[in-house]
Image (cartoon, rainbow, N blue to C red; front, side):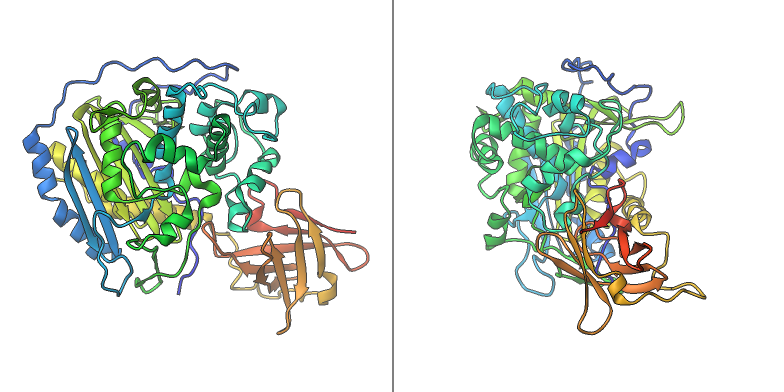
Length: 537
């Protein structure tokens, strides 16, 4: 039975990875690394609408079947889907079960965890704060977030809200996520970003939940409130999103909520894990309903208005829809690049229309997607309570493909599901720790390895003996315990856990002259060179 999923899931938006299919523009270079970026120039006006009401109605008429088939093919327990067209909710429906094997059904008011679909919601909140002149997009973060630092002091003093919301700060991919898995809270994780190695500032893209979270925290501090309250005050309450929250406790207390599910090796689904994403609430911790999300879609497609009321400043919101960085360079000179804006994947389709999208993916049991064509005043949101197997993204892709062409141009589900599967497989160790090599060297006595090891980034690790024999690691503030299994010589393995689990990973001790280990390296914690622990005195 498969309990743990690979890390680095494509929560940044599968649509970016499908650039060839969604027809992005080519020949655009990344922003230059100037210390004081100016706001991007507005793109050319949107081409006139090309979809008729009949086209959209026809695609909506097929949605029931699209969702039903996707659920049958994948086994995903529940979903909720909403479509907005020309400032009206044209479709709103729930499917399946909130918890597998139990009677409560999913409806339009069932609360789902959004995962990284939280990011465009967060950028909407910041756009509201920018419109209220609390901050500007191009304002350095350090002035509002005491103690904030990155590895390079110059970058620390210049990195802006826009830099962090567009993932161009130079922080490495998913920086800080493993600290969250070990149980560290938001302040601790943000304080450790200073240890992360940096790539070229404003010239490289890497998706970072906690970089964006740092920027969101800075905006909230500038207003003098916490992020959770800022979100409520600026967006959720004014927009009438009554069931939306940036607090995990609110999701937990909801009487009508979809719990998360994972798929076992026999393809059965089970509700096995609880995903508390409070540490990265701006980037992945929002929960909402399909009904609330259609109100947000209406706001996005109507220049910040919903119900005739200007909730978010139009100019500040428009900035979130513009390309800020090349997220995926073209594969060849004639190819097309993928872009990231401020909390959005930004692309342009075959007809030259702006397409905005974002996916959300929790390996512990959720997958979501939002996709919009602003020029057509058309958007869809798909919420599911199953681990990412491609369903949420494929439903959105199928819908727009059908609206444009009358039918899907390809079978999107295996294509998108394959991307998620490849990302999971790529995260696993190249070493099969379940199969020790022939002639493996025996381990030393337990006392050679037991003791306390220190690491400035991950904190203290204790290697202890187990009552049943053998060794165990204790990691993180909650002293999570991982039994070690001997592999070869001074190398052991353990089964990783949490959102970014990678299956078995290696632990290698370096033993000194006194037959006592002085150094310990944990393989999956060492992706950025930060996984070496030194024995304490």
